[in-house]
Length: 251
Image (cartoon, rainbow, N blue to C red; front, side, top):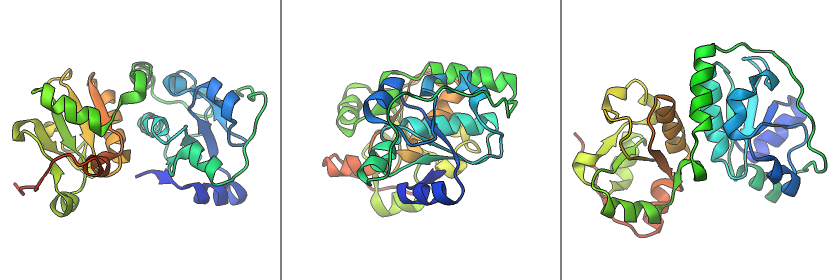
């Protein structure tokens, strides 16, 4: 799912360095440092600053504080035409620091215009709108808040983006059958007739850990959905918190 681990990135940096895109806020870099060589464009401004990105076929690794924002960024960049974008998992920059890999500190390097790619202007406008509208909290909802909201909001729709075999093996979040949809991420766009008809419907996507559901959330945002969040920690966080699980009934 377009990810790269901490150790794999470290090896790649030695052998064949990718273009590193840090989508945190500048204040985070000033406070905590960054990976040497990274270009800093905050998530909500990525689509406004495409002139600083490399050619469509250059490998890009995006990273952030924990792995959430860089997942949103990779969806936007792929939609715009970049062919090899991966998000840094394993805690993203936080994991990089924990692993003891080197960081750069001091004055954040100035951006250098590359003008190496020319995405479709209509797509650029769509991604600008999507990223500029990213909500406070970047669309994350905790298992605790989801449990409360399920009880309080009868209109809340859950979209499970895991593979069928995961549902059979592990079960699903207990739900109102009318407000639960299974759309595996691998077929997410092909199955868009399963998406809610109302673009303003309250939706929470979930998967096993929170990565795939954040990709799905970003895709829904890009199609104009206005009220989509992704459950942080996924089904694992839900079960670890002791919240109710149901067996998956094969259709």
